[in-house]
Image 1: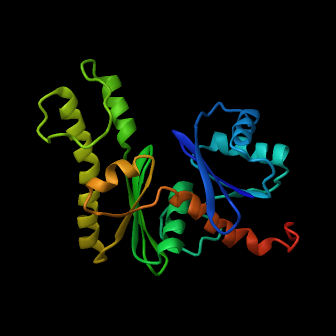
Image 2: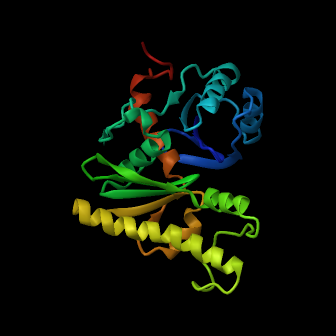
Amino acid sequence: MIVLVDIGNSSIKVGTSNGEAVLSVARLGSRKDMTPDEIFIDLNTLGIQAPSDAVICSVVPELTVKFISMFRSRYNVGHPLIVTPYVNTEVELNYRSLSNLGADRIANVVGAHFEYKKDVAVVDFGTATTIDFVTAEAQYLGGIIAPGLQRSLEHLVSSTSRLFDIKPIKPIRYVGRSTEECLQSGFYLLTVGLIEAARAAVRRETKIDFSFIATGGLADRFAPFSNSIDIVDRDLTLKGCLHLYRLNKEKTRSPEGEDSD
């Protein structure tokens, strides 16, 4: 069993794989103060008993270290693959500062390229809303980062005394007749409008008509209402982690499953 871990600021997504496909997926809460023992208990609760290897895709450095420690001490996985811009991706990463390119964005791009083999834009509805562009020729062109819907809503509500929390859903009407309807309309249009505007602007700039793929926690909720979303793939980041495992670890493992020198 290979364990695939996508560590975000709001949640941690854990998948398992036999090396061929992502088999099971679960979501945990993400806290910087989690201990390696707490992480082990959470994974054990998910039925993860004796993994042979692991891939860690993380945007939370404090948790990266703790997951590495946990895998080494509890599961005897000495060298989990850490997703960085410097592992073998077989995608040309055209980014000015590679050290600032998030691991989740790298996994998304790799997953999108190997899964779909065409010009793809990955829309990840996470703590931030990111859109990343990779061509069929494995050229990563860069991307877009915008405030995430849920965090934006939480910030607005916490900063404004007369507003209140709402569920981010498609509004009944765009011209709201109550504060709740107005908020729903505003945040819905902010998110869907970003995608529509991005597709049009990037098509003009690159002359490429990218297929838009949605992933992340709110993908199912917003993708059906955007004419620009072609595919929903909730597990794309973990699929990217699995492809990175194949590119970086399988080639260096002996038939007995041990790392070669």
